Amino acid sequence: MRTMPLAEAKKLPLWKQPIALLALMAIAMPLAFSTWSALLNNFVIEVADFDGSDIGWLHTVREIPGFFAVGVIAIIIFMREQVLGLVSLVMLAVATMITAQFPSMGGILTVTMLSSIGFHYYETVNQSLQLQWLTKEEAPRILGWLLAIGSGATLVAYTSIVLTWEALGLSYNTVYMIAGGASLAIVAYCILAFPQFEAPHPQVKKMILRRRYWLYYALQFMSGARRQIFVVFAGFMMVERFGFDVHEITALYLINLVANMVLAPLFGRAVGHFGERNALAFEYVGLVLVFLAYGGIYWFGWGVLLAAALYVLDHLFFALALALKTYFQKIADPGDIAPTAAVAFTINHIAAVFLPAALGYLWIVSPGAVFFLAAAMAFTSLVLALLIPRHPEPGNETIFKSIAPTPAE
Image 1 (cartoon, rainbow, N blue to C red):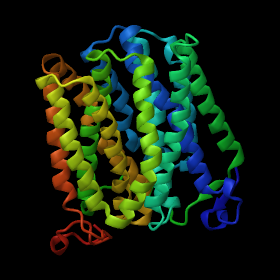
Image 2 (image 1 turned 45 degrees about the vertical axis):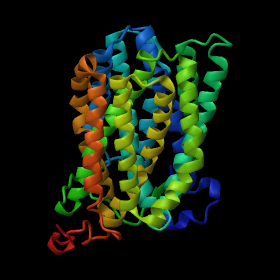
Image 3 (image 1 turned 180 degrees about the vertical axis):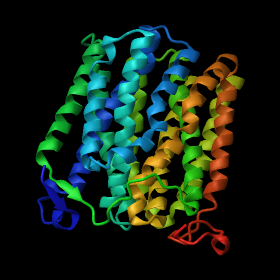
């Protein structure tokens, strides 16, 4: 793979430019990971007889590589970020392909660990590449489109599952093999077709923690804790409490994908127009209300239609998280993007390592309490988001500009 400065890449045909590579990776990742996630709850309940505690432990294991995402900093000393991202996608695709070959607790946990290493290292590098390759002006809009592209690719996969799962009597192994294989083919094309793009600002290849990024770190921590409750227990609730089958819960995912395809580009434009503070505040207010309503399903016996509607709204609000990326892009030194992306991913996963397992035991006692805890976390995120200035930049990272440390700190 030959190298090419980012400035020269603009002379290439559109299909060989960095944005095209980001788009193809945005397709390859959800083909493997989203298909794995869509079948997971039914697979572990029907094949491995998981309960709430087991699913909590599975997601704790899944998040361990995210906690060690800071290891990316050591790897990029001798491997380019672009190469590491593609290698990570290969690992994710292969792990998806072999998931159904290990239908036991130990086997599922092992494959999940391998899949998670690929997923989290890819996501860490992908976020870094996005912020390095996109300008501050175009980042909100392009990030919205990349989210929509990934949703569109996943829509094709999920539609196929809904239409063929019962009609053709598909097995878990068949679906996992097809999804992982398709992802692997796209990654192989990316490796062969694109040069290695060199960003103009060399990245710091050591771990850094800067005081002036403290609000970004805090928002990342709360985002990780809050998201885990949704990822682990919202889908599990649909299967455990309401008895959703594979094609039914996948149909619910389809609604989310269509909504994201339509709204994600609009969300990107909204972030650019209204600013990160307003976008994140809107997201967190919505999530507080959604999680309170989730708790009401258990405490007041509200029905399946409300649960399904909340699941869709939950996904839509999470799409606004792209504002957190653009907030960091605006306040960061250009050379800090790669190491801080790795550190932020680790911070994001601190709670993820212990929270799913701990809340799995609480789920057995009181599922509603789990969602009320998530509402409290979303409210804390709201308070933090209100500390973002209207126009963040180095030296103006929070509304406490008068007492903020200097940009060098």
